[in-house]
Image 1 (cartoon, rainbow, N blue to C red):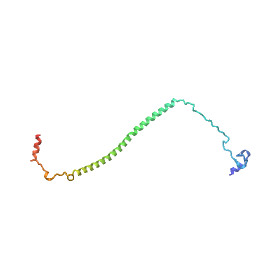
Image 2: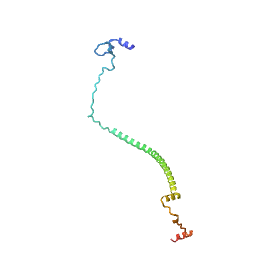
Image 3: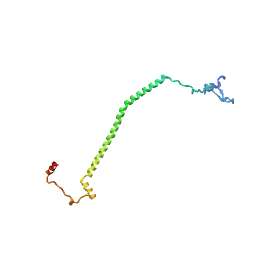
Image 4: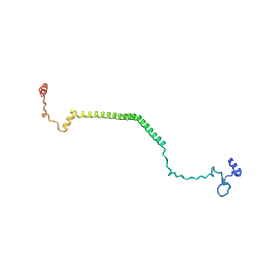
Length: 156
């Protein structure tokens, strides 16, 4: 508080500004910087002002758009084959999984088909549906000899 003592004991020109109308000595405060500056703000209406077109700026904008478009086309052209390769790899992986599943299904179906076409299963189904003929009604027809079938075949 040494600075406060020097400030209060200084000459009359350095006395702080008095606050309020009370006139009390303990209400002195130091003056703020730029306190005496008064600012007046004037509103400016530019709604009636028209901006003139600058052909140089317009040409520069179109040139920038053209160059940016060319750069984008080149970058996409460079990245597109890699993206197609990546997508083809995903599709190949998916097709390999599907192929493995279909081969497993094929193996299962072949096994089921072999079980269903077995003679034991066919006899069981025939008995279940009443399709088994009586043994007295079954007649085996055998050819006279093996060569007689070959001879009949050639005459037709």
